[in-house]
Image 1 (tube, rainbow, N blue to C red):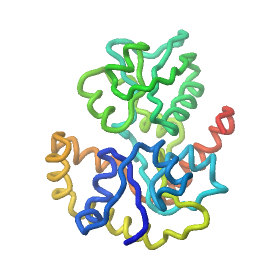
Image 2: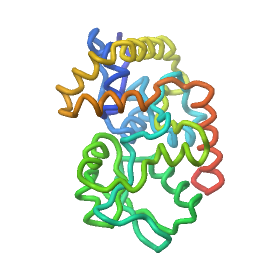
Image 3: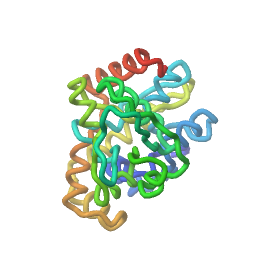
Image 4: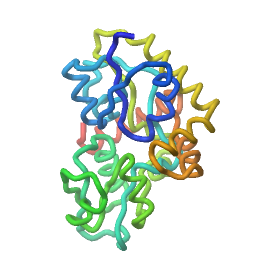
Length: 250
């Protein structure tokens, strides 16, 4: 397979790509923001990209079936604090610069809930570093999973979106540059997803070794996610686009 494939460098892409990589396909790992840059620079041919980036650049991209979406709680996109709940004061939330979709999702949720907290973009990604800047921190990916074990979870953004809309939140969607047809690659990834879901015990055992996370949590985490763009996921993405326009984010 000569095409260049990317994947999120997080636990959430371990199940979808496990079977594919076990069969010799190499995927380039990077943060969601970095993968978007690599697609734009044509350094890779196919990868999940942040949903916000996709919506902003639909005219330049072709999308596919593979996605990373939360059914309800997402577990790995969370607002944490050492002690403080969100209220209606003029507080600040530190947000890692690695995120595009979660940042804008947070802005929507704050607006919908009538909260006046403002976001501060910070280069760090660890909760401990982010919380040096503000009383709250938005953490994503594996750092969010670690933060859940050390800090108070104020908000799970997947769960908040579900309460707000009744639909899944699509955090990432697979894409290629518009002129490239990566349907065969998408098909291979989706076959890998199906294998992973059918053999989740194997995937969980391997993920436990690789990431050092408890089996029980990993199983819950993989089952909390969906990796296919179905009718509900597409509606969730459309609603996210509508809200981004409503609040002047797109």
